[in-house]
Image (cartoon, rainbow, N blue to C red; front, top):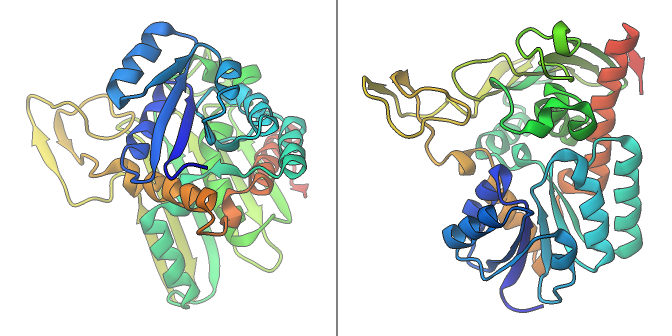
Length: 348
């Protein structure tokens, strides 16, 4: 492997752009190539991020012997397919959440990872979010005593992607798309729960707001650990005002609250509005709390740095980033869906 790690990004739109922003901050990596079906999108991406090569299919990218890592920033239904092909082509893989839309496909990814020995990075940014890393340190020190109850949510007013409207392409609705963050984070902390109770809107006309979306636009899950805390995860597409990420911990000796998207020291009142406040905010007029280093505070920068350290061999891969974690997080989400459908608690 060369001194600088060569990254091939598959998908040049939303996730591809914020991954690109983070890769540009790394001293030991280059965005070597971009793959996207749309020529205009590829050309714009190459100019913005100074990328030398582009491909109209990911298959052509995988045949490039100079690429070390494939970074998958595609719609959910393509995650498993591209990850498997990339590892079989000898590439390491970074994959955005969720790792697949079905348990069967996720299991295939995990199997191929073991067979090929390639490094598979399940890209859960919450594990690296500085505020949550600090929160875990305080909890581990006994700062709030024994944990009794935890809750985590990600909510906003709906996905930009047309693929998010269809279960076939997304794997569900808000819960699999947003709730997967909390599911993965708490799995990394506590392991697999003993049982789950899930409640969701019904999709289409059964949704609160998004009547054309096949998946749910609101859902919660209660995770029970026999020898641990109760955990509530929430995801919805009915929250206006921008993406709202909140994690709370309640212990016998204290309380710890983390506001990842609005918990910053900057407050603005604007009559005219300005370019950007926070992800999914539909206005910047009036009072807002614009994000400061948004992608860094959500964990993306430290996440990417850790992945590079692992590829270079200077760091052991964190358990919360493995294919096994991605698979088990998806099992938690699917069990939540099963519970909602069967109207009862489901044991794992």
